[in-house]
Image (cartoon, rainbow, N blue to C red; front, top):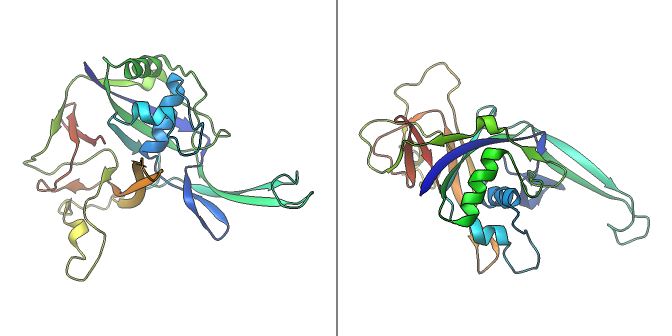
Length: 262
């Protein structure tokens, strides 16, 4: 039995570390991506994390097949406020010299919140347990947003279940996607196709309201041979999309709402 649910996670701060460093600062992704989300789901049902180099964590192996969708909540045009926080390690254990001083600066998300959509198979033990724990606002391990200093929570009163849902492909009118979604075209590779990435958007209803579109390149999953992220380009927008837009893994819920679940 398949069950589509959503719940909203919240934290005072978050740090979704990018694998690169920019000018001595560890940077964070703005959007919660699936590999990080699976770690949160794993904590909720008590699955183990990283134990050994070159071995994927148990939570990823057990939960990677769950279709998920993410919507930022309370973000300004899809982007959360960020701050730089510097940590000072004077124990000497973090540097080559005894008594050395190591300063680490991190870009940190301020009050991030995300609405999470999950399509669960209740005939699978882990997914059934996840369904029950989310509904009961219960976690086996303390979930956190990127690092264990930033614990997160959710309210069981905000958990929603959707009985009316279906996977869709062909559209006959414009539509809006409530979640971030994979953008299959490039932003700009040449003068010939420089508008291609915007061909899917319907600008005919543009107003004076705060309509926007934002892009972010995010980890979509792991390359299980190289043990590194596979990346895809994601978009989030308040604009409607044209009916000819080819969006994969699109689901219609409650008769008039669309989400992408990957």
